[in-house]
Image (cartoon, rainbow, N blue to C red; front, side, top):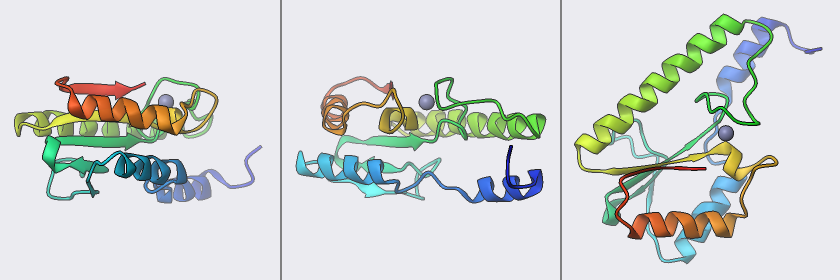
Amino acid sequence: MDVLTPDQRRRCMTRIKARNTKPEVVLRKQLFALGFRYRLHDRALPGTPDIVFPKFHAAVFVHGCFWHGHECALFTVPATNTEFWMAKIGVNRARDAGAVRALRDLGWRVLTVWECTLRGREKLPLNILALRIARWLRGRRGLASVP
Ligand SMILES: [Zn+2]
C-alpha cells in the first residue's frame, strides 16, 4: 500500500532525477583514474548526454530503468495511473531514440549505461563496468548498451 495519494506519488516521482547518483559518480571517478577526461550533462548536444568524451567523440547516457522503459528487474509497470506512466515512458523512449539519431548524424558514438548495471541484483562491479566503457571508447563500435 502506497502511503502517498496517486497525485502525491506523481509529483514525487516527477522530481526524481537519476543524475549524479552515487554509483554514477564512482563510475566517473574510475574512468578519470583510467585517464579519460569528460564533460558532464552537455546541453550543447542533443539529449544532454550525461558523460561526454570530446576526444573520443563519444557520448554516454546513464538511464534510469523506470523512466526510460528498460525491460529488466528494476522495471515494473505501475499498478496505479498505468496509462499515464506508460504514455510518459513512451515519450521518454521516443525522445531517447531521437537524441541518439541526432548525435549519430553529428558523428558521435553513443553508449547507454542502464541503471540496473549500477544497482540492483544485476549490477556489475564498477571497475569492470569502467573497463568495458574504456574498451568501448578506444574501440570502433558506434552504438552500444550496457548491459
Ligand atoms: Zn534496467
